[in-house]
Length: 544
Ligand code: N01
Image (cartoon, rainbow, N blue to C red; front, side):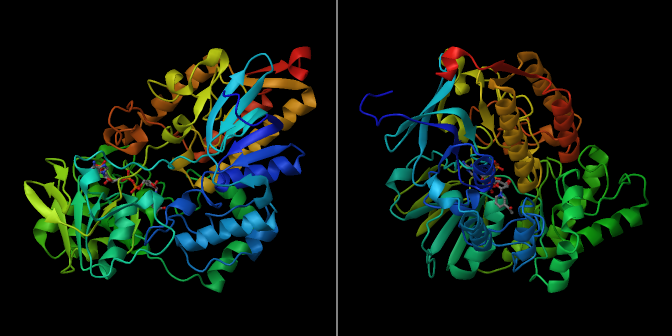
């Protein structure tokens, strides 16, 4: 590290990221008396909700459940205006939490952590930021989220383009006015599917470039009623307790029947009801949609038929109807009038499944040998998920081994929390934990509690260093894959599998056995004396 850098300061814990993980972590650690610094690359709190400001951005987990449970007054008092909250409302909530718990003054905004190197002698992490600050910490905690590194494809000619380009994952703060514009949207994942209907309302013309069609279920979003909010608030404690052990960390109606055990008419009626009710609970219509091909086929075909019913142009409908991978194995999208949007005169769909976009020109782009002219191009092309943001920091553990090097064939963690060879480095909702296959806030709270409890345990026991045992880590990595391969998930080219990033290792990154199962495993690990973790007591040299 450079000598010109500022003199090192020293804290118990450095946290990276002021999203929902970082805010709760900061709150807990400060309450427990640990000294902290939190660095956030954005100019404000909110993480994913700070960056993803694209028109139509909205959460697909109900607000009454996509919210913190750690403070009863907070959950009783906060008024959510809609069933599924829009990005500005979630960001307002994050800001409220930061103010209510007086967290803001402990955060360095507009500051990126560039490097974190573990020094074995002192047993401290040496951390360097892009503002030139250098400091040391006993604990280094990446609370950087799972989908925070936006990916713009490296298209030929992109720098020659004279119009404006946008990425849904790093949208401008000021309103973008698309009135009268011809715009391209590249990508039809959750972000594209949310923004296309809203952009189509404003722009003169929208051309959607689709590489893979996605399954999407209508959200049936509606204004929050007092009755509905109260049905949660009068019993929040019990409901939250149940959520913590629910398969996805959310309460929703789960049908414990196989799709193949019922008559065709019951199956169709069940899908109809789920479609009418809306939301991603569609895949819980039966208990084996994500594990049994024939069951999944019935659900997939039901959704394809809904698309054929909604979209008037049959050729367009067929292009929009996903085929070749099971429903739910790429992130199931939830929309407001997505398929209906293709009935508008000002929206066209271009299928680029056979040949990628050829090149960008100063005026637009070339695909399928045709030149299209655009005033703006919107990239809804996703993220380098789960590992991308961890690799953006030069993290080096024992013997200066880089995290990126250790994980060259894919992430290796014990419980998605820590990785061997990187003592006292914690990840909140890291790869190998339920993370993106759950209600993120439920999983965030569990991980933050587990990490902070571990730090208290170390403090109480006079311990200095915590690290997974290699055998425990190897067993966990294998277990995560075994569980994933009992499902249909590995069949899809999804970002869960790293398939959206050229050259990224292909393996299923989240732990899919369920939030409740995972929590019980963690509870047992703690009850068994932090089984699978290795601790070292304070030494004279480390205590200096
Ligand atoms: O990103 P994605 P996203 N040329 O990776 C296409 C969460 N989220 O930002 O499928 C052409 O899903 C790519 O095509 P393909 C949620 O977890 C939640 O939409 O790889 N196309 C795909 O269509 C979600 O899953 C909410 O063939 C290219 C799209 O771009 C995650 O964030 C809302 C391309 C990317 O889809 C990511 O969603 C929004 C190229 N070179 C996001 N490269 C809610 O809560 C990529 N694509 C509702």
